[in-house]
Image (cartoon, rainbow, N blue to C red):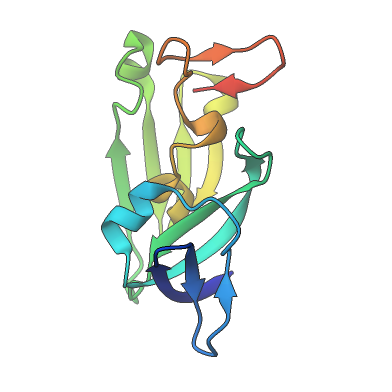
Length: 146
């Protein structure tokens, strides 16, 4: 994991750490991150999933926030996939002290994930809708779009 200032200049986007090193300069940084947090202190790391444009690991970025010292449990009800009626009925998650337990009617969507993946996953690779129909699709080459 890298922590630094999300920076965008005329040539590239990158994370500038405290020692002046540029991280992810030659990589795709999702424009949603740049629109919201350019110039702010953030954390960044690579995900296992790959961007379909260049087949490199997707970079996830999230803001530096103070963490709670008190134990907590939050329940989330989402309509993340509003185009699917069944998702409307069955997409919930529980946040226990920052660890997210994500539940769905689809077995492959039941997962334990970090807070940043639940809240800040970029719309790239398999996390983006299909460019063909804007929905879920599995292409002939095996690429999956959610």
